[in-house]
Length: 494
Image 1 (cartoon, helix red, strand yellow):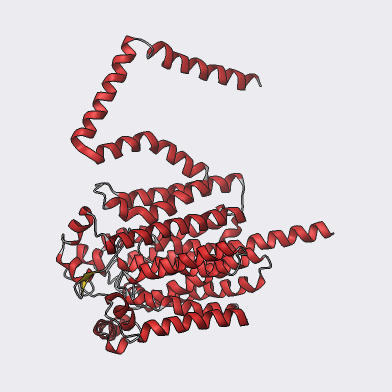
Image 2 (cartoon, rainbow, N blue to C red):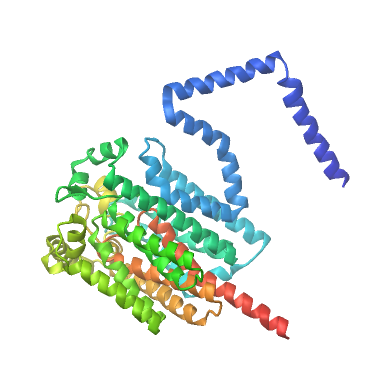
């Protein structure tokens, strides 16, 4: 008690010395005035960057402390930043926000080990999913020694986005422990999705912002990808239309799953409106690969919850989708939607199929692939004259096969198999209806991402790469919470 009292009095004396004796006089007034003038001048001459830097110096230490000490707060910051990252970048803030995202994840990992020291619980590393994630990370690290890799720097730039993001699975598993924490995360997820959908409507009917318009015209390759049939594909607050459309799909799936648990009529109406909002906003993206994901997820939904009510609801949704596929229309968004279900008439689909056929001999003769980061932006930057640098993978699975070989593709498919298997098993084992619904929602989202990873690269860009592992973790977290509740009930009955 005496130590606490002396510590408190010491802090009080320091506060009095600094704030009262040193600053409550003419000298203190000049110091504060000088600081104000310096800060004002910096903002006046350097604009929003200076303001952001000043706010970072003020708020940064508090944020670092909060992320490490309060893990749920840190997870919320990570999920919000993952959603808003590219929106902030397009505001003209010239700052390495990707490094900030890496920093947030490193701080969460640091907090994870601090909590592990205080409350040891290494069970998060048990189970087939945890084992395969560790194997996958290890295999990606081993790729640095790939003898046919053209560039080690490409590996350095790529491994951080692979290893650190996947380690978040263990952070989520350890730190998310209650139903209320899951609810809060899902509420936040839906709020961010609503903002993204409404912003897409703004882009469609009002137009792009000045910064967005400058970005669209900054590179001819951007226009080639996003300007189709006389219209710009919309990307909302995300990096590109693919990331936008996939996030709208999984948000729709989340709302459909929640419809099965809510009882109040007004909540059902709100969820139905959100489904319509997300689905319609998705059409603005012009991403044909996303259009098939919702019907595919609904097939699994019908299998998991087979009943007369679900069958009727799914049939109604199926009729609506069939109507959209075959209805004569001049609307370019619906026309592009219809072409997604007629791949034989799609020239881009034929081109992708031809590219995959062309690269198959390379995959078979390179069991470890061409090296992590050999294709895409990093390949063009660090090995521009290599065979793979200019190869367009156009698919998450094809990229894995090309960069990590057929061994890497096999390991990745085994990982996805275990995730889906655990999801199905946990869904049928969970007794708590709310947790059962959350498990089903995450299973459907993971399933949709896996389907979407074939026509596009679904799991490499923010926020999908983070939210995918949130969904994977929640599949096991819901089962763990349910088991704890069951054990508590059994203990009470005894």
